[in-house]
Image 1 (cartoon, rainbow, N blue to C red):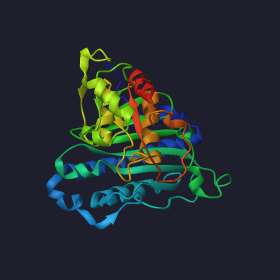
Image 2 (cartoon, helix red, strand yellow):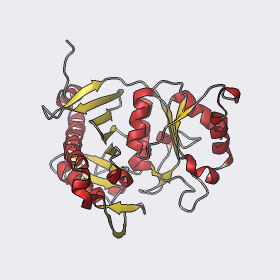
Image 3 (cartoon, one colour):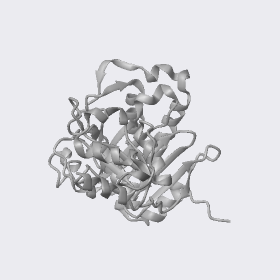
Image 4 (cartoon, helix red, strand yellow):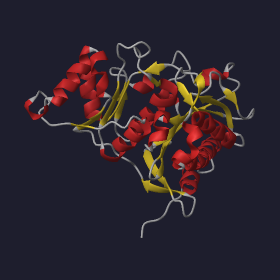
Length: 329
């Protein structure tokens, strides 16, 4: 019988008592614990109808419509991180960094509730996080700690709240999948060393925006749609959930490629996903699973942010397909 490994056990083995790693482990445990509570709220669906309502005319710091559960999720994550060695929390929902622990040695960047537009439709939503080292002596402005290329991340992951609550996590040594066991209350290691197949016949994109795309993106999709008779020489399937965590988990499970390009619409010219809160952590997870992640041309983890809420195009998933898409550009 194979050994049952809890998240706690995995983190203890990974940290090995090293102070810097132990700090990261504490932060991840706290985020996972907050995620269980958020998952419980999401699971109540229409019974918590008020949490799916838009907060008046309010928008979050990135300019998107803000729902009540976006704010509740942020509050729960912040409360969970208070006793941990996290100095500041950078959140998609807040304009400025939120002080957490004055003695902290980490900064956590988080999208508290990815896919919140799907809250009231019983579709999987989730929480995305990125963890970076913080040194008060080297960062006169705490914001500098998050304004770094994604390759500086020490850990990243996301929780997906669906039929199962799953945690997909990396600490720079492969990508692991943990599943929350409702009987024991623990997260259990379900898949170690996830590998995304390099080749795929499946892509995910919001194809209703085709009229707004630039020429390389249009050509790529047209060639996929042409199937076996076209230049790609194979038939493709399209899958699109609309919550990135759900689309990402599908890719980590069976391969595929996710595309959210920039387009001609106002506010979408540079893409719509946030570099720090969404693209960087997903790119880190993807590369650790053998996949690729670019903005269409440039490796995501090599891009230095110029704004804390910077938006960016994102292509990630099966490596060979990501490289093929880059060739179209």
